[in-house]
Amino acid sequence: MSKPRILVTRRWPTAVETVLAERFDVTLNRDDIPLGENELRLALSTYDAVLPTVSDRLPAAVFEGAPVVTRILGNFGVGYNHIDITAAKARGVAVTNTPGVLTDCTADIAMLLLLSVARRGGEGERQVRAGDWKGWCPTHMIGTKVTGKTVGIIGFGRIGKAFAQRCHFGFGMDVVFFNRSPVDPSEAARYGARQLASVEAVLAMADFVSLHCPGGAENRHLMNAARFAAMKPGAFLINTARGDVVDEAALISALESGTIRGAGLDVYEAEPNVPEALRRMENVVVLPHLGSATEETRTAMGMKVVDNVTAFFEGRDVPDRVV
Image 1 (tube, rainbow, N blue to C red):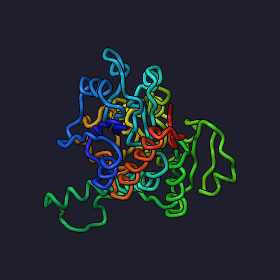
Image 2: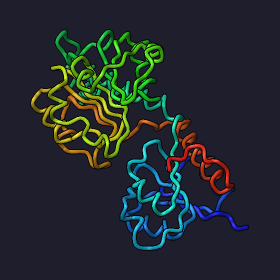
Image 3: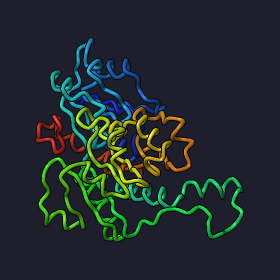
């Protein structure tokens, strides 16, 4: 029996590509250039499986027109709001993701952003690299103390919990959070956290607000002008979730007006495009979507996709099936 034909839309860790090549008839994107909508539509009419990443956009239009022969989308990433799940399901295409393996590394990046924006780390490094540092003085580059402050977490899943653990037990922070479903108080206490009834209740208390909720229509622009106005004066926003969770125009306005003090961002509404206004602000730390960017995590993510696709074509239960 011939091996299933599989397209990998971007370059993956070599160890993962090697395993895929052993098990399947694999086409790799050796130039690592993102595929456009027409190319993805062609792929769906050609390959038994397509393995996209969070940078690939698969709206409903991609599933229309040519016949869809793809049976499974093995997504390289936890979030899948870049895929029109309803359209995929309607065409009989299974979708999987890679939960669990990137929890710690994403929480680490959230902590990096929080510390960097609070203590003006990015700004300070740029000053040193430019040769503009004039030496130590008591009033130079005064930031915000982190230890003992209150952090508010929106979304208390795996990553939210891991971030809470770092904040509370690493920096003695008071942790409050909002989650759509109730979390058992004893479970929350394991992370030094307590649940509040609304997003607004969290915003009113938090010196730092960190987003750890899914992207997509339900949470699109969850952080909007009204919610920025509801944050404590002098508070900071941290986002390692998805870019569409934040209304970037409202964020820019809140930063320019001083409604909030700063922001640490790893994700953006129209990646890789980052608004020039955010790029030029000294009180904003911007990273290029590094949440899962460690050798260990990216390899583990790829192997999860391998496991999902292998199980699918062997007729077994798929571990991380979304639809």
